[in-house]
Image (cartoon, rainbow, N blue to C red; front, side):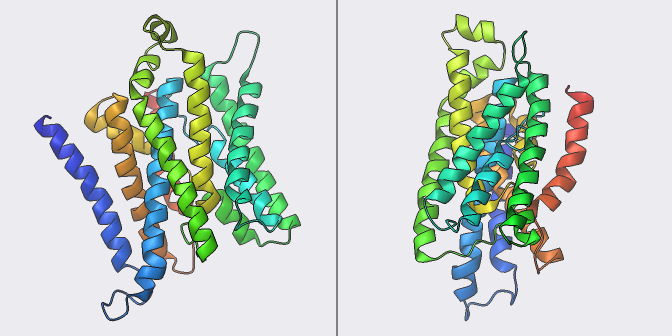
Length: 315
């Protein structure tokens, strides 16, 4: 491993460690060894959710970008995150928010969204990446509107709807929901591991579908599997955090700037950096608005200028 690469891995680990440490020491009442209950009951679960959500969204985002050979796609721009939030909304308004139906509905919502995107993007000449991205944006807005409508009709507050559409880490666990979250976390991590395990195929298909076929990579099958596994991982995360934007978009690009384009390095690096960046975003949210603020407010403030930069230089 080269010297620059070692420095890069240390930097990613430092961002994650900094996010964890600052999360532990930041919050109402500060930090006291004599009163560890707020840390054990509130901050450590928040850290666990943040690491899972940031890491998984970044890995799925990096996989989608490699698969579609487009720097502007991620679970949010393709509508997958909004579709999962729609599924979670159905579980919430049917009073099934602490049951197995919650992650199942989120997963099915994510699958429905990516299916609609493919249908809308289809044409006589086939599916182009540009049409996929445009269809993803349309589907994302459509499901975000449905989330708002269903929450209001279900007599829930607008604040709950906003958190579902823009994300937060403030989950309060019961014994039952804690076990359910553990199962979802295992599935999300297994999905991320599957994507990382297929890094070589993603490297090949990111070059050209004809080249992939000549090297024995079935592009159609790989595309279906990446969308299926990515939707599963995103659904397991969004069921608990809501739809968090731009982490899956900007993090893989930052990692490529350090390590280059190979997915076997980009995807694990994206997990570390995505987890660390989401924890730091959560610290900012809790610092400027202790009463509550959706995470996407902060991630979008960073992500939108980065999106514009990519639009001007990479597309």
